[in-house]
Image 1 (tube, one colour):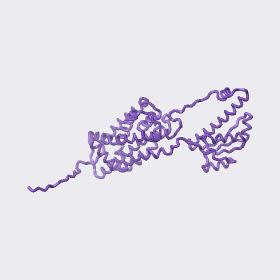
Image 2 (cartoon, helix red, strand yellow):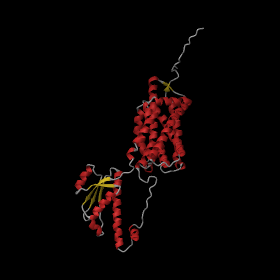
Image 3 (cartoon, helix red, strand yellow):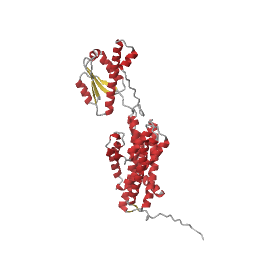
Image 4 (cartoon, helix red, strand yellow):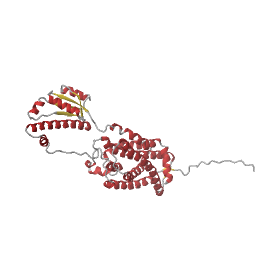
Length: 397
């Protein structure tokens, strides 16, 4: 087992592609992926305002729009056709049309409707534009309503209560700034650990299979296969522990992402996750006939795995049969458990289902890894001559 352990280290060291995946990809992604999200939230989305009223109240509305953090009034075209042209040129991402008699209708107490056009091809842009227009509309409407109540003889306090008789207080949990980076990056990093292990193990297995097909090999017995699996898994798990601590702990501290889990609980949860990923990679190793195949195969599965992890689309909305399939993927359980631990501050017992299923997957994939190793051919190293250096000594006797 120890011999297989260090033989795997030598195989990794001699495989530049595996080194790049197991080590290089971790460091590259740790700086490359979070950089676009350094500004944390989307601010000042450019928008055009077509003011058909040109009244003091409409100009106040435009100033209030431009003062919010959601929207930037980048253009004030005189017609809707000019606004459309700017939209098609991507100078603006939304259009707000203020109708004629905007101020007169409000003073008469009549309903006034604003026409807002958003680019819904990007949900983040749409959310910011809609939030900005809705926020300013409610604020301006509340101020006008309070003035009417005060004109009717109510005090400022009673006018405020009459204007909003049931105030809603929202308390955002776990991610108060709605930072998309803090939401997505921890999940992506956890998935990256699985993918780097699968690709790295597959590339080393592909090189071994190339040697077997070129030079021949032998089938190990079950006991030898058991030792080989334990030795190989020890090599990859020891590497994955270091990269995981770097990615899930040090990078989080550097970018100041929430980390509400104790280190002991993080290590306990990481054990079955890393073992299941490693045994799954060893199970799939004999399928890769060359070193290039695992790269193509695992990159092809990266996009489905992202959806299976449940942070792009909630897993509760999956079909039942698809939800069952996701339990066979370590990342789907690992991402969910790690996000609950690190972002939500949940104790380990609250992710007990994920923790126990990951241990079950570790046992299942360990058995399949032993079977796959038992029925695959390994390079025959028993007849390789060992170089011996002979030194001759001169003697006067």
